[in-house]
Amino acid sequence: MPDPTPPGPTAESIKADAADAVTAALAASMAAEQAKKDAIKYAGMLTAMKVNGDSAMAVANAQMVLDAEMAANNAVMDADDALQDAMAAKEAAEALPADDADRASAIAVAERAIEQATAQKKMAMAVVDTAEATEDPPVIDSLMGAVAEVKGKNKLAEGYPRMPAAFGKMVADQVSTAIGTAAPGTNGSIAADTPMGGIKNDAEDIGAMTWAMIVGESSVRDVRRLVSGSVTTVKAMSVMGSMASDLAATGVTLPTDEDNSKDGIQNNDGTFYDASYMGIDGTVFCAGNDCGQSAAEDGNLTGSWYFTPDSTDTLFVAGTGGSYMVATMYATYGYWLTYTAGEATGISLHSASTANQASLDLGQTGEGANAKDVTAVYRGSAVGISAHGGKSGQFTASVNLTAKFATAPTLRGSISNFQGNAVGNWSVLLNETALNAGATFDTNGTTAGGGAPGVWTTQGYGLAPINHDGDDGTTPLVPQRPTGFFGRFNANFGDGSAAGAYTTRAVE
Image (cartoon, rainbow, N blue to C red):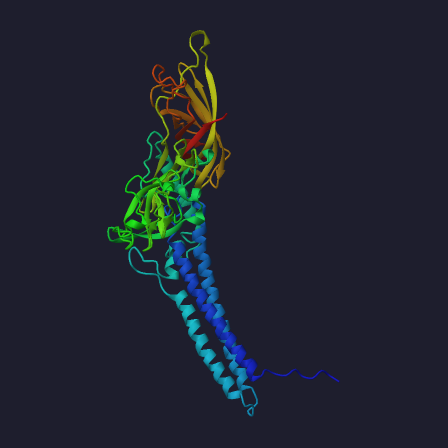
């Protein structure tokens, strides 16, 4: 016997198909709306300022806009497919036998699905069809407005006047010009609004940590504190249960239970007290109505006592007895681009240290017949921005210096192993420069990278002069050899240019 004819759709299966069509139409309209949001987002991230001078990121952002345009167009087609499915569901419902008790309800469900799918398709089409804003400069609040930022006004022009690669070239050209303005002899000053993405430090080499790293990130939380009638939120940790001696008070003595009516303790009006926790200066304050201290002189703190440091960014190193002290024996170094109307127009280079930079020993060791020149090697890293082959972006590199401590001290070296999206097989010679044997020095030398000569600067830092034999009465303080050198540079190559800053430490 031949196989029986498979049964046709039922009213229930038709209703399910109609519901699936509505779901698909809704998903399509949501995809179109998301594509619009993505396009607007990335259209606002095409300038050198928005990509921090990284040409590859500018290209990627421009491509994201075009990808969003394609996604929106696909969403419209998906919405149309969903509408067609809803219409097919209605046809199937109408084809049910006239005596099918669920025929009418299946038709009604399908008709509602057609209405909903039609509405969702219109919403998806509106995303694609909404024109760009006419304001000058235009407000990018539509898909087409975002696309116009990439394709240009004439979307039919062959090759389009502005495409992803063009944005990369635009950023790279601006960065190349900015590098040309670099002045390594001028140290850029870090301000509160300075972009910190290109600023590094070598504090890890000495085990320096922030307060949160010392006490444990999990112990730190956002705590509300009342100051002069205004609520602020600070990073703080609970010190409930700590001994009073754990918080070396530098100001008012913390209150005890006998003093629990003290203004600002039980009613949490924001009173706080200077204190030091593990050698870290800060304040202790009450964040509740239960703060006190046991009657014993060194008794436990009770209730919602919290400690917050004076600075959450300061770096500390371990001292003695479980205490910490502010780290100074490290250098910060780096760069940031400066902008005009979103375009990169300049670059600031920065290198500095809070360690001693005066009275360093750059001379010979020994006296008379024992005097001799002494050399020392310093190694470290550099960071900066470069332009190469129509691209631009941040680089890292290795730095090697050789110091000659003598009657006429000198320093020379090289920068190599450039890594980044816009570098060549580069090596920079840091031509020998004289070190000023005075109290401080920041000398200028020349760089050689295969193109026009550039400039490099150097500054030593290290321990302050010490009394080497403990005889305070008769022995003068003795300057120490530099712990490290830091500075700034620019260099030109046959196929690009670079500017940045570096830091090094003595190789033991």
